[in-house]
Amino acid sequence: MDQHKSQFLEFPDGFFAEVVLNDGSKLVEAEGVVRQIEENLRKQGAELDVIVRAHWTVKGVGDPPYGNQVGRWRIPVVLAAGAATQEVEVDVLYDVVLDLKQKIAGKGLDETSAIKEVVKEYLEMELSRGGESYWDPIRDRKQEINGSALSYLFMHTPVAESLGIQR
Image 1 (cartoon, rainbow, N blue to C red):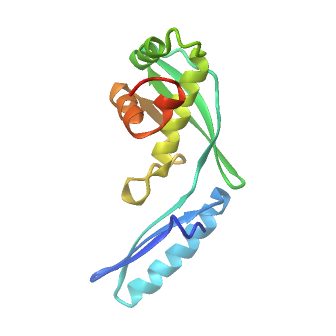
Image 2: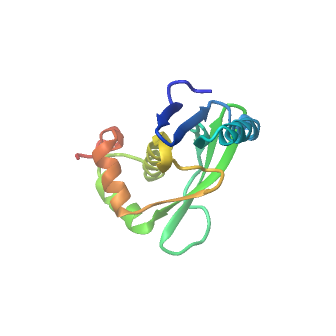
């Protein structure tokens, strides 16, 4: 369990727990333990609202484009959480691809590397969110980067600077 990302809160009508595991292969086991605790608390008249999730990191970003969807580049990504891995796909809308191409033009940057860096940074940002707004890549294996997401990414992460793009 990741003690820094996990949280346990007490409210007048019950408890909230966010249990974050470093190893995604232990999710099923942890969920079983949590269900037992929920049942015990319910018998005592207390409610437990709980989230059990893994701390995923980006292990590898595949080369674009992948797939034949019109208007987007589908990029395969492998996430890791301890011994567990999860494959996800990120659709980068073609408007974003064109915008990135324009921003890196003349800077000597490789287009594929720039797209992969944006995808990696975007997923790391999404995976950093906890609580009720966390992204579970096991249940939802797809993400999309549109123009708004790219703008937000450029304003709130160092990816623009690492690509040499002015904010």
